[in-house]
Length: 523
Image 1 (cartoon, rainbow, N blue to C red):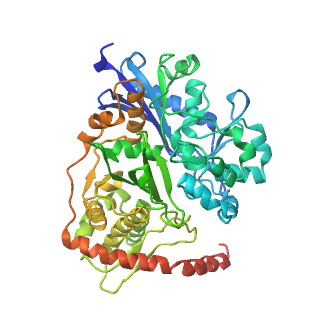
Image 2 (tube, helix red, strand yellow):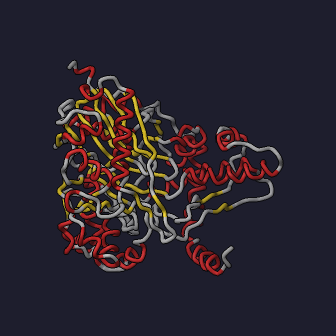
């Protein structure tokens, strides 16, 4: 077949949606199909997902793509898969699920995390993995299962992640990638499992559960006949195992281009902030928070901090406005209010109101971990109105972004941004002033699927190196640099000083408020 007609399918199995996206070999997006994901939450903090249903939904997305792309089966040069990170997907005999997966949202491992984090060995584990311990991670979840439900692990043969489970169904191969393996159980310098990290989690006796590590830019496995029939594709099609979705999204959005390492923030319901660095430049903070996640580029990793809440702060404030307008007999939709954000922002006067965006019930995890952290405005007076609150919340997201990058070392020289929220000129202006760095908006629609597909493009030899692939797939889609305005940057220096001082002073008050809430009678 003519190379110009060939496509690579990138699959991004997120928490809420599974997407299948077709790209031509030069990176142009041709078509996309998706299926809503399904998971269950319990009052005990559980968040679980059916392995069988997830595979069925992935098949549905691929079949949907086949309806949109003519001759998809014969045109597909390769398939690549990424997905939601962390979590625990156990398989046993015959590659059958042992139980529903524990997702990254699952909080049941909290007592074990507290216990492990208090041990002297935890700092040694952090120095190996570069990753702070939290309930999201497979290591913490396996350690908790080993304590409270060892029979579950006794029935399991391999512990996988979401994308690994899909890869197993595509190829029959049990494997994980260097990124998830090293930030949970390994050494980010070697991208291999670390006995120090495994022992610190108390899981040396469960070492056999950890699968082989496969780099999808170097190794692919053929699509099985059974999977091919289910998906409407051809048996033998090469399948590449992508890295975890966070770095695939950053790769597709421009965390590296022109051979230059940069920073990349995805501003969605949560905020994900990454810096690409040579391994030798990684800055491990004293607090032991964040992640270090390998990129599919030799010697290069991303250092990561993540906020529990980003745009959900804006959604909360707009919901308050919608409620009040409905009470006044003037109902308005959420979309109508979103469309007014920039107007309200620029109507307000730049002032001295600081907002800490810790609106999530789970508190905060980046750049500090505190489940009791809560949002709040500081500096309000009677002269402030609703537009000023909008400005404070938008600027609060920018200040939280700066707080995360500060925990990784110096501020980045340039920031690439993606996510629905960064279409807002108010947010982009605040981000560039807060970081005192130019920002560039990625025009790539499906950055996670693109990042995975880029790995497959290198694996099949369409490009010799990832940087060559980036030159075609990423760099042309980066917008023009938006520069910080001098006086705005100076104002943000003052805002950030207040932001940091207040944040560091609040934990005792948050603890008291949590005790007060626990004393309140249930409704």
